[in-house]
Amino acid sequence: MNGNLFDILDSCYRNPKSMETFWDKKKKFSKVLSLILDVKLDSSAKTTFHRYIDYFINYTIVFLIKKNDDFLQLFSEVNDKSKRATFMDRYFSNDLISYEMVCMILNDEELIKKIGSHHEWIEYPLMLRTSYLFSISKERGVDETDIIPRELDLDCSFKEYLLSWSFEEKKASSLFDMGKIDRDFIWRGGHDKLVSIAKSFCFAAFASTHARRGSMSNRSISLENVTLPTK
Image (cartoon, rainbow, N blue to C red):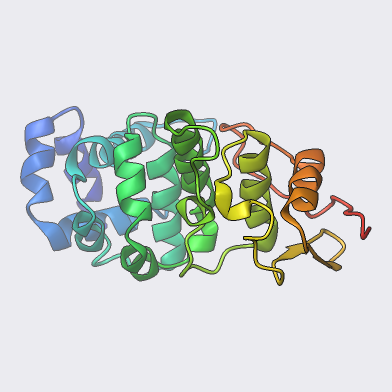
């Protein structure tokens, strides 16, 4: 495979018919993907080989992946979870991926678990989905479960970010109204001190004050250095 990798990519470059034909050879296609994900594409010196790889990945993302099961076939020979995470990161970074597709993937928690290493790639698509839901929802029309998957282990600071964002945009549903929020809800600050929120109006004011909204183009989001009051 290594010997003819360049030839395979060369035959597929700017050739949709060849890409579609090669896509039908699922295992071989997956092996090629695994090999090219070893190549660092952030180099300033772009070679013909780099251009071939860029085309192969971008065409796959935009035109070949049409349903969730396609990811499992695509990764059948990609056993390294870090490679999978790299591809998923690049997938969601592509502006041609629709919100519908983003939501369809995020709603499939079994798929997310099978892909693996979700901590390395899931935050940005969750932000995309949250932004989309805010744009189509009425005031107080978004529930916590709409933006934070229940079954996935996510970083506490990232959950806080999404919740704070929902309050700032006035999209948090009545679930967070006084008397309906769980008294045991915990807000974990950057200094690792746990703060219990008993009443939702206090929580809402707190969230509004300490919300940190990140740009959709800024992939790195962290509230680790935010100091939260205990009163």
